[in-house]
Length: 59
Image (tube, rainbow, N blue to C red; front, side):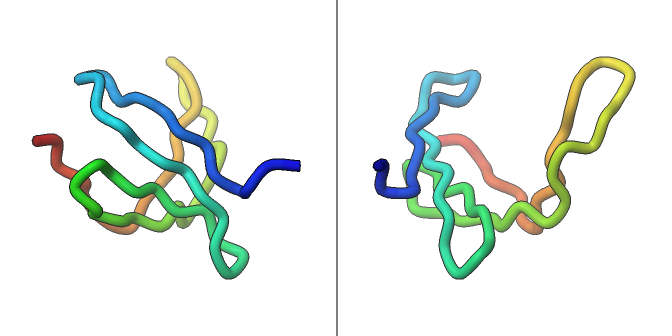
């Protein structure tokens, strides 16, 4: 069983953590900024997007 966290890398190679907290999926960037995924798996013509409630800025 895992801890409910997944570590990913963004396009610039920085860490991005996806975690489940209080029934919501959250993105946490390397600087500590957080964004909740408000709508998941939105099909688009060129892929799938997830809507988040905050803009996360890279370093």
